[in-house]
Length: 163
Image (cartoon, rainbow, N blue to C red):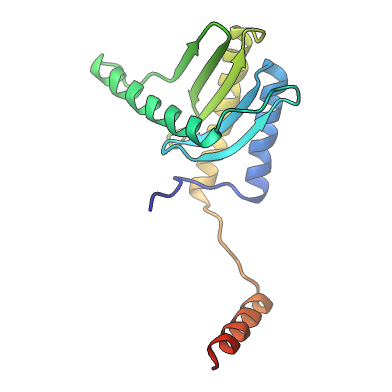
């Protein structure tokens, strides 16, 4: 089973959500996502005015695959990496930037959001999220089940199996 590269819980998750919210307000983007390089959504926010988002799991998977292909292209051209990618259509755009080695920042924006603001504030957010991702990798969350929960679960299982 494929699992996310990193996970965010508690204070780290809330910090990521705050960064994404601030980035939405600063840029005018519709959606902001923090994903890992395998395509798992770690955190996401949407602007209050934004319409229903596209399927985020599909978006994250496709963006992660595109990022991997882009890195292969960079190496083919003799570059260590392409740090950011911008896709612009007639009405919608997509900004993707590295948030450290394990994660990507994704901003989905429309024609009303200035690309300069997207890139400036997206870069700042990606740098902050990179430090957050490094912290999450360095200190993975520990699942602490308290004693009462363990005892109650054990008693329930014993009762269920007649022990």
